[in-house]
Amino acid sequence: DGGITQSPKYLFRKEGQNVTLSCEQNLNHDAMYWYRQDPGQGLRLIYYSQIVNDFQKGDIAEGYSVSREKKESFPLTVTSAQKNPTAFYLCASSSRTTGSYEQYFGPGTRLTVT
Amino acid sequence: QKEVEQNSGPLSVPEGAIASLNCTYSDRVSQSFFWYRQYSGKSPELIMSIYSNGDKEDGRFTAQLNKASQYVSLLIRDSQPSDSATYLCAVKAGGYQKVTFGTGTKLQVIP
Image (tube, chains in turn red, blue):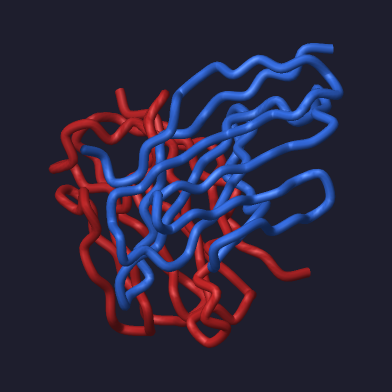
């Protein structure tokens, strides 16, 4: 049963704490992405990775960090430097080999920081 | 000017009618175009991709692309209340895989 999993579904943290969001895929996709969605807004790209051990900043990378040690996994850390971390975080993946560039999303993690 | 623009809506249509959702984009070299459906509180779900000018049909959905006018649309025939969601237009341009999303159009299908 192929797909993308994100955990946890809901996450609550105190201000000043770092938190790591998990994203795993078994679709054998090379590329993975992290987006942030705020109420009434579109998706904004945080980081993306096209291959293992390589990743690039997206449009709003400040206050976030990622790693890509395995093809299947692309965890996102929300650091205390991120000024407004409360949001819906979405992980996606796509295949480079098919050339379609279609991105498939996980179920998301809703992070609340108080 | 936003890279991908959509009317935020809500667009209200009666059950059984055709819903027409529109999207314009600014980058002329854009190559790939996607429509996603997002139910409230859920993640986006890919429903259509289109890469060349013209129409592409899949069930009740038809995507239309006009690269000269930098315009892509999604038609939903025989709209159902279950189609009520926010529809996101997404556009890919350039050599790497960055995709830019519009802010979405909220569709309400009235029974």
